[in-house]
Structures are given as structure tokens and as C-alpha cells.
Length: 282
Image (cartoon, rainbow, N blue to C red):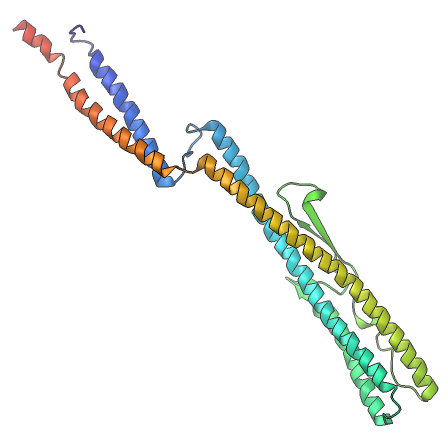
């Protein structure tokens, strides 16, 4: 190698290698401190693009899971209220049957009819007061409720609950017009028959809606489970793309530290080469 004064090629080469080692060391330290091997586009442009898409999908599906859980809460709340309405109708049916027993006195029948009327009023109260997050669910005002249960648009990513029916006593046909007493035995029998028919019809109406709500809950449960499974796999894929391999990166850090230290030491020696020219001139 020629000895020159103006250009120290050896020093320039060592400086270049030192710069590379320092950059690589900085990259390793960033990856180890952040836990991510992709911290900017220059680390892996293609990997960053894929990771960003997967991360967006995960966030969208996480919100979709929340939406599905909200739908589940609404379906459960409505179904729970209808369960209580069913219990009330069954009690009203018991009262109607009990009222036709000839062992009852007129006072007994009046008392039974009072409870019957109170149960009817409670049906209406439940219908008017059952709500979640300010939305009434079984008074007919909820209509159709749509829940976004996917990270993309389209009907296939939505589940709809139909809550357009009202379940107050009058709508069910068991309101104040229904009684289980009469002015005489014939009238009482007529009223009893009408009450039984109305109650059975109301029970059938509620049971049909409860079946729909139960099916919706099962669908939402499956949807949530599927979304959680997709998110789990997507998170694993995201981790493989962007997470730091600490074992490999620690080894890389040690390597670059060694190279940096060696380059620093060699650079000091390379910078002394021009002074060798002076010795030739002595």
C-alpha cells in the first residue's frame, strides 16, 4: 500500500466500517428497547406495509367484538325481560284457572281479579321500562338494530336484531279489557274463556320472540368466538413480522459492539499512517 499524506485510504475505509457498525448498533439498541424489529419504513418497507394492514384488521375486529358483545347485551336484556313477562302471564293464567273454582266466594274472586289486573299493569311497566343505554327494547320503539361485527363493510359483516314489537298488556291482548270475573256464572265463564285465549296467544307471541332472541344470542356467541380466533391468529402473524427476536438481536448487538470497538481502535492506528512519511524524510 502506498504511503500518502493527502489521502488516507485506510482511515477512510475504517471510518466507513465504523459508521456501519455504529448504525447497526443503533438499530439493534432501538429494536431491543422498543421490542419491535420494524421501527421505520427503512427497516423493512414490505414488512411495515403488511404489519400495518394486519394491525388495522386487528383493531377493526377488536371493535367488532365489542359491537357483538353490545348486541349480546341487548338481546339478553330483552330476552330476560320477556322471561319475566312470561312468568307474569303464567301467573295470570293460574289466577284465571283459580277463579273458576266454585269454592271461591265473591270476595275471593274480586281479590283474584285485582291481582290479575296488577299483573297486567306490570306487563306494561316492564315493556315501557326495559332499556339499555337509553334505548327501550320491548315497547316497539327499538325497531331494527344493526351491529357491525366485522372489520370491513357489507351486509355479511352485520347482524340485525328486530325489536319492533311492543309487549305491553294492551298490545298482547291482556290489558284492562280482560277480566276473570262476571256478573253471573255465564258471564264469568265467558270472561274466563276469553282471558285464557288471550293469555295463551300472548304467551305464544312472547315465546316466538324469545326464540328469535335466543337464536340471535347463539349467532353472536359464534361470531365473537370466530372474531377472537381470527384476532389471535392475526396477532401471532403480526408478532412474527414485527416483534424483535431478543436472542438473535442480543447476539447482533454484541457483534456490532465488538466491531465498533475494533474499528475505533484500528482507526486510531490508521490515522497514524501519514506520520510514517515523516520518518522516511528524516
